Length: 114
Length: 250
Length: 85
Image (cartoon, rainbow over all chains, first blue to last red; front, side):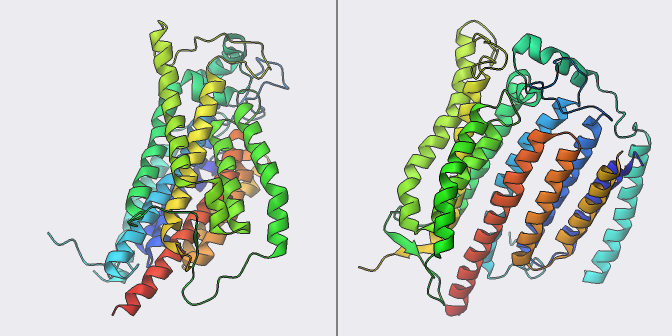
């Protein structure tokens, strides 16, 4: 049962990848990339967690009590805010592709002409 | 290749990937019992050494401040990419543009939306500023507070017209604010370098544990990051809205 | 692992599956907003309040906003594309 977070993270990664591979709409594809990113958050969170310990905020508990790992939380935090702007960039690319080709279906887009 | 063939190929590679995950996870300790020396050391030292009570903000802006500089610039660069990709209008956006939808008349916002947003906008701004300035004491910080602050002009856009939104957040002011926020981070690091320390070393007086000015350079960096994140998100919003408004016919 | 943590982990896995299996992007924006809320409860239950704050604001507000704006722009471009044919 203690391996459940790892399994959930692997499941989210694989289901997001399935969404990317079988997508029929570029905007749906971008959101599935977001699901893949959230799988990395679950994995990092599971690595940082210690059973029975409180959050690493020492304003109301005595400084020096053992707490959950703060380094992985710092990693996840900046990653979440950066995710939304990277998704905005991906959506902007999808809008540009639609402007040039008239369709959002990745199966109907022609290969790059060189 | 056909869709069915692509699905079968994906299923085979997903099974292989699942085997790789299984091999990797079987070598790891179970969740909740992973031993991490660095995190425990940071937890013990963050209050006596840096006078900051929020260990996550201390790691973000003080102990690993250089990494957060890189992350902030990823955000800056992707907002720049969005603006470059979306703006193909020849004349800049002005305040007398208004919303347009091709096949229907754009309905005016209902009274319920307007009343709710009048009540919510000051609360949102206050909460965002609280989140940014109290980053080193309680859960919060520049990134979370910046996103909360960015939702305040959005509420104004939802409840009013584009002209009112443009009055509060004109394009040039938002771009300027974002650039100032990004530059603050580098200038603080450079100032620490000029004062004889290393880049982004905590050289300011550390203050008393639990007060608003504790932590040395962390409150200043929080303000810069909050400004930059809120400016970036409002700028990306303006870039998306660019083609959805049109000149008001006089 | 407390029962609450196990429960919320299974909910997150189901939520992720729901996001992928919703094919229409407009309804997917709503499902993604709900999935972000589930993720923030997960972060809160695993003793990470900073991360939960970040996820609530980003996943429930900023992300569906960007998706819906992109869709509005695509719809407008589609109409212009059809008109010019």
